[in-house]
Length: 497
Image 1 (spheres, rainbow, N blue to C red):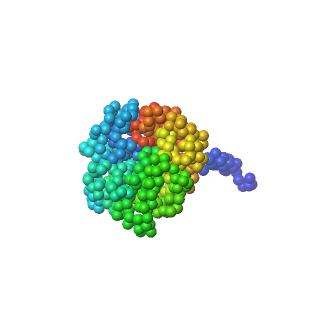
Image 2 (cartoon, rainbow, N blue to C red; image 1 turned 120 degrees about the vertical axis):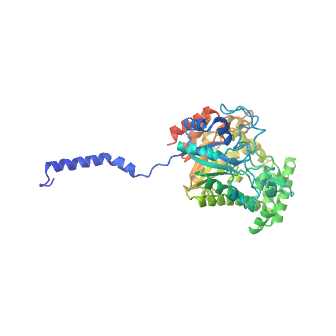
Image 3 (cartoon, rainbow, N blue to C red; image 1 turned 180 degrees about the horizontal axis):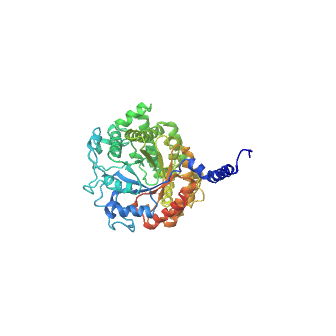
């Protein structure tokens, strides 16, 4: 202490230093950037708010499920995201206990504003089930009062009886109209960008979640998914717009068609148990070598799919840069190494603000078994299916999952959820958040695994502990039991910080 420093000044200085030391940790914490709240989402359709009321439904989602984000099904003609429980499945313990099979139609559950659809023939898409209801305008104010975010979910699923659809449909190998819409058709592209712009300009939402679970022609020919029949003669698309895109990409369209005709013959021979002299896999690989146009044409579909996503994202950002667009990564990405090779997470992360990665473990056992049986009937027909499953597990870095005969009953494990979440997190390299889709009550076969509260808790916990930026409870609220929602919420509250 300096000679001219009096005792009072010394005490005051010492006290200040002591206080600063005590407050240092708090000051450091205050200087840190605030931790981003994890996004805890629920996929939900209009029918749930009609049946159960807006406020009571939001009460359930918040109090039981710890949900802070709604993924509101706004456009689809499919029952996977909209409508009540699908026919043949037990009703959950909430909502109306009766089927809407005869009244479900689908479409746009918000209000389409005509000026956004001037460049497409798809103008009449308003869902007719609930006349006078605009589900976004109805739910959004109530969600905002509760501090909840709201994203509009839009899905690439159409009906054949919608005005304009037949003009835009894909064309198959035999020149017949297919079930989906060609993503190279300018009217289809204009519809998706028009719908995205309409929703983001007309409502103060937080963004969109885009669903497109359609596969390219190669996997469709092989039935290399969980929900497909093997229909190699009906692969698409060979319409004029798709051919024009193929030529622009330097692909010989006639060679591509010829290759898929030969692939159809290979598949049909395999299903008839007509083994090639060199075996099924060698014959398949030889076909790809002789006709590289097969894989090039398959990649052409993927390119269109991702171009549509990029255009939708650009349209949304054109309305307001802060709006977010997410992309649903379908389940086949999880257990099909051929499909997985076409989905580069680092690349996808540059096209979307977040990725919803499907890790549905309860229904996953049934789906994975279906995939193995499909590919084991064609390309890998020479391999016993139980051995094929074990081999595929090694390729996918799966842990100790059930054998083929037990897989549908056992489902996939929480370890599978953790591994797939970790793979996605590593893949995006920090470029965008990963939100695993958690299976709550997704319908399965009579003897297949059903989601229990314990299953749901374990899966949610696995995703969050692995480092996910949140989770999205799937497929739709109208399929879920309240106890499973509550178990998911318990995991969120314990591990979602």
